[in-house]
Image 1 (spheres, helix red, strand yellow):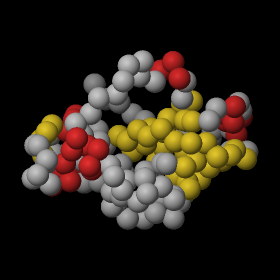
Image 2 (cartoon, helix red, strand yellow):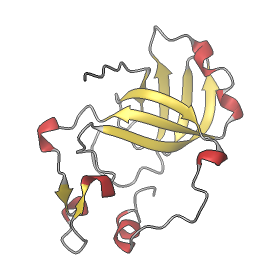
Image 3 (tube, one colour):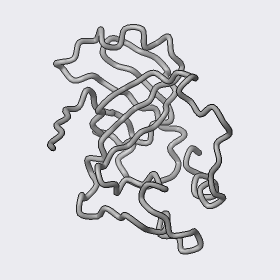
Image 4 (cartoon, one colour):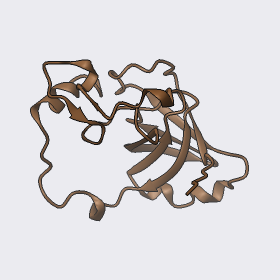
Length: 152
């Protein structure tokens, strides 16, 4: 089976490096591609948060790690790719919940998007509280340590 997707938008921001931490101050502009009308964003500004699904277009598809130490840290357990959020994934897809700052025409500005400048956006969805976890989120201690500086 073949799956074909085309970007609906592209990310514009000041971040060009692929490093993992310090995303908290980055404001990203997301501009729809020309063939998608600005009306596709109608009503989006009534939501506080969005889910951005994007393509890790600068990762090397030959570097998929199905099992690894998160960030190469051998003090943390070796885990499978589906127990991590790293960019070296089988389908190179990223997903982040962002805060919507504003919308103007065919552009939106968001905070807390960990995608670099030029990243293709595959889909944008509003966050509905009914789709958020209904029970307490549980995660291992190593993941909390890994994320300490991510949004600073």
